Length: 404
Image (cartoon, rainbow, N blue to C red; front, side, top):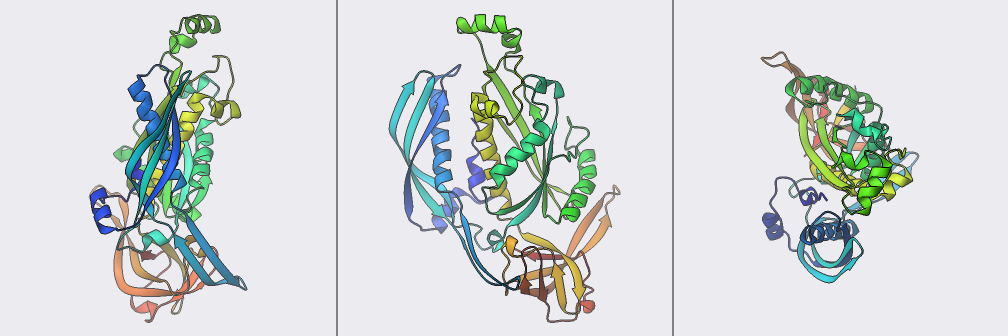
């Protein structure tokens, strides 16, 4: 079972430096995790159950954001935003360990320590917007077992539900848009250049800061012979020789919506027992699917993917495009839903198109050293003022406002 604990920590900041920099109270939480003992050693099952218990403890004490807003005639006049800090595991103690049939259950008491988010940065106070596209399937024939042909858009829907639990993001689903044609090599340099255009187009059309996509690399059965026929499967299962496990592996990509560059990618993989018969038309995301050990393993992996995305994007600079220039008043496409409040200050950057030596198009940002002060905030757009004539520094539509 996959658990990427680094997704819960701040990128590029060591755990040691966080603990030294932050003196905060400890918080003990009791949680339970479980794992299958089938086809694995007891030590491996115990570690999987431990990781499951740690995940559940993190979920109990995970990041929470609460906003208390006051709107007057559709304009935000007051907004109190409280964001809890992230947590790291300081100590853990085993409280109980039980084995029942083929399942190992482990109960832990976990000492969690809260640490400051995004030190020396205000970016973590604002919700990043992202478009979640459809997933491409590298080996379509693997979806035949269980009739999982709808996984390419079903996985987007399932991941969106998990991301919805993280209040640090504004999410727009585009499940039927799969950006990669050469799936096997995605994202190679050639495909990345093509994706630059796709990412920028999606981002501008949907007014988002990031574009998330992915490729499902593997849905294969560990032992396909065990599913050759139902009679054969029942026979080898009777003699405890059937390996019913199935793999699940997906690559996740995050592209910057402003310049289309690939800013982060990671592989997430797991496996679990596929207990349905070869003829069963289960369908991805059905109740039968989620109730199987395989479906439960995929569900756990989706939680890990959501936490990883949250950890990667939370402390990224907050960026939004200027939509209109009206004298000293600038209008832009982010508002209260992003956490903006009257009085917030954003740095103004001019955006320029450029071509490199390989004739690839990119976006260059130049700091105008000018600050916009937010004056009016609506749910999805805002306006603010600058203290100089924007024409002096040629501020235009599609220039960028940034909070670092």
